[in-house]
Image (cartoon, rainbow, N blue to C red):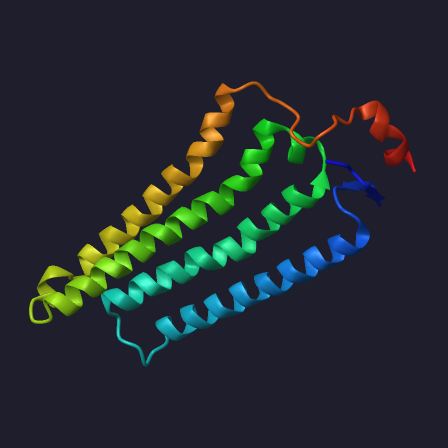
Length: 183
């Protein structure tokens, strides 16, 4: 991997034009993620909607997806584009990816909960309220968040067992960075 550009104290892995397209694409993606999930949260929490287990699961799923767009996606962009000690060190790199992992796992567990909830609602329509009361729904949601945090943190925990390595192609030392930093 060739490190091609230096811009205002930051080394970039890609050229200016690909960097511009990369940021433009991910900026539009982040905007759609954030605006779409805010619309879902506002609609679900609105006064005209009922507090059903399905709506609670969808609202929690939207919160997890919103956090993916607000925290996980910028960390991913930063890690993929910028060359620095934190983005190229195998130990710290996984810490930057961790929010994305956690929120994606939380989203997956919420999608599983929504699927099971809808299966119960369709298969047992007359018993649905007794099978899925709001208290059980909140417990399932809590487990979704806890399991998402546990499974999403596993790659970060696993990297503490391996030696810290440089993962960005050629290693850049502070001696090589010093002229760029002083400019």
